[in-house]
Length: 200
Image (tube, rainbow, N blue to C red; front, side, top):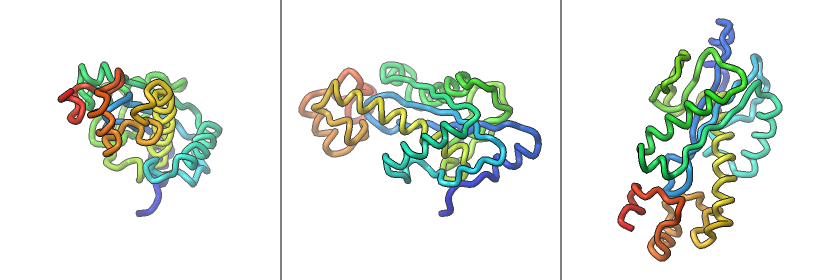
């Protein structure tokens, strides 16, 4: 598949609109927060190495994020932690995180390009794009910001709960992680309503 491009943004730029890409990281893990990001890239942006964060090595994501931070008009993140995820469910938590990210932007966008197939409750015109992080550069940039931010949080949690090795799997349900839950029980940052954690 070809890398994401600026075709979605270009239509909006031509119409005089300022779009923001929105994406989240962390819906699948058994532990830690879900993190969303919003990124507004400038018209005629020259960042050509953007891609879906899942396709990039961690070191590459950090390097590209430095470039995003330099070029972007505005960036922001929204974070929802595991206790609230358990109360409202992961889908609602991911949407809430995206809403927080958009609201925290220093500049208000005219249009939202959102990864996935759900709209968010913000009175700004928006378009959900399935697999948007592999199609749209603004969403790809948001996916990288969200992923790098979440990885930093999970590395911090690794220092608090090293027995789970969050630094390696970032809370995803790997064989190693599931074995650690069986051995030690869930930590304070585990999502208690998730399968694989719930029985404890």
